[in-house]
Amino acid sequence: MKSFVAAGALAAVLGLAPAFGQQMLQSVCQQNFVVEGTPRVTAVNFRTWRDFPNLPQPVALKNLRAAMLAEGFSNIGVDAEAGALTAVQETSGSGRPQTLRISARKTGNGTRVDAVFMIQAGQVADSNVVRGAMCRVVDAANL
Image 1 (spheres, helix red, strand yellow):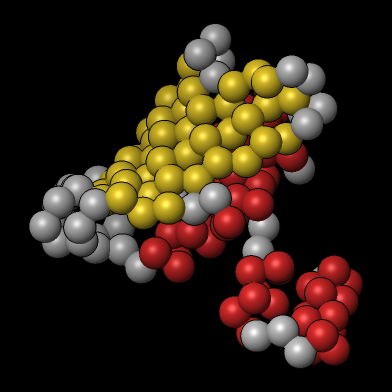
Image 2 (cartoon, one colour):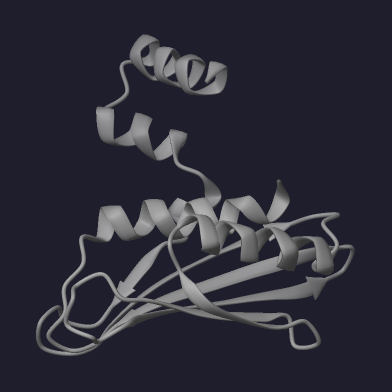
C-alpha cells in the first residue's frame, strides 16, 4: 500500500497525467497484458507474462495452482515436467467453458510465467476484469 500511495503522490507532485501515473503503478504482469481477436466475431485470447528471478519452478507451479483455484477455475491439470497448468471456468451458464493455460518455464535461476485466457467466438469478457484476475494468478507465483 505504501508504494501505491508514494507513487501516486510522486505523480501528483510531478504533475504527471493520471494515465501515466496509473501506468507507473501497474505490475509488470499488467504492463505485459495484450488482447488478440475480435470480441463476438472470433475467439479472443488474453495474454500476459512475467519473469521471477530466483524463483524455483516447482514453487511457482504450486503457487499458481493455488491461485487458479482461488480465482474459481476447476479441472486444473498440472504437468510438472512440462511446467504447464491448464484449467477451465464456466461462468456464463452456456456450457461453453473458458480456458486458462499457464506455463512456468525455468529461465536461469528463476522462472518465467506465461498465461493465456481463451474465450470462444461469440463470448465477451471485460479486458480490465480479465487483466486483474490473470495478474492475480501470475503474480501469485512468487507468494
